[in-house]
Structure formats: C-alpha cells, structure tokens
Amino acid sequence: MLKRLIACAAVLAAGILVFGQEAWDIAKTTINGKKVAIEYGRPLLKGRTLPDLMKQLPPDRIWRAGAGPATILSTETDLMIGTKKVPAGNYSVYMYCPEKGEYALVVNSEIGQPPNEPLPKADANRTNRPYPAFMGYTEAIGSKEVARVPLKQGPAVKSEILTYQFEPSGKGAVLTISWGDQAWTVEFQPAS
Image (cartoon, rainbow, N blue to C red; front, side):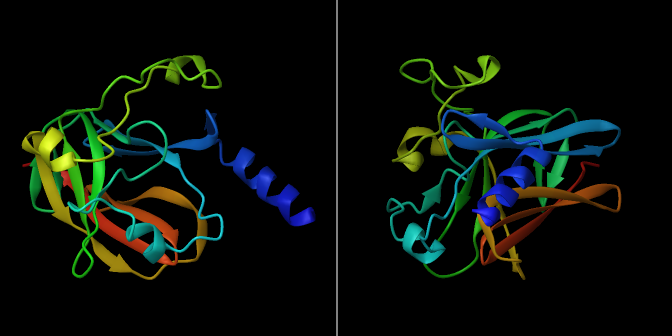
C-alpha cells in the first residue's frame, strides 16, 4: 500500500496529466530559442515484458510510441533529428521495432485521425486528439513519412511507465525514450 501511495505521489509531482485512463506527459526542450515538445500517452508494463509486447506488432513492425491518442512532435524550428532534416511543424511519432537490428524513430506529417467520438474522461483540451495509425501504418500513411532515424540503444534504469526525456547537448538536446529495461536515444540539433 505504501509503495502504491509513493508511486501515485511521484506521478502527481511529475506533472503528468491523465488522459482517459492512461497517463499523459510532455517532454520539452528549447533549440535555437524555440520550443520543441513531444506529447505522449504513457503506457504501463503491468507485468508484461517488452519482448512480449513487441511480438504483438503488425508485420510492418511499427509501434505507435505511446498510448491513447497519437504521440505528437511539435517544433517551432527546423531540426536535424539524427541525420534527417525535419522542418518546423507538427508530426506524429512512431517507432520501427524490427525483430533484429536497430530500432528507429519515425516522424510522419500525418498527425492522426480524429476519434470516432470524444473521450468522456479526457481533459477538455484533449478530448478530440487525433489517434495514430494502429495497424497498416505502411499502407495508410507510410508515404507521408518525413524521417526514419536509427535509435541508439543504451543502458536503462528499469521503468514501469514509458518515458520521453530531453537532456541538453551542444546547441540541441538528446531525446531518451525508456521503458522496461530498455532505453533508446537520438540527437535533436538545429538544422543548418
């Protein structure tokens, strides 16, 4: 019981918003004096393992990179994500998770489809957020892909809840995505 109370307090202290039934968070940084943010739903492992979850992916091995509504990258400045240029704007974010080999961050100009109906338990400004392409990403919106950037796998502190975090690096930031016993990183730098 005490562990549960401490966990709840930590979630509230982190400023996480509840969207429907899943936690909702925003990772933010500043690049070139402009805002860069990723808004995402934070699924819990709930006793599952990442390998078991990844076995459930569709044949194109694309994961929605969050829970609930689409994971959205908003940038007020042109970026270099890894070696790919991404113009200022709003994008949906996915992860390519092959059975073997490097995972990749996928940035798509299609920010999602409107839900069939407003989410009744959602915060008012998120009730009609777009939803990602759950299945058939490649056929549905693959042609609108802006960048697919390899992620570097690194050490992770075991985490029950999916977390995106920016850390300053040079003139930009490093994005770390961590979940379970896995962590992946990619550089976000100003575009030349």
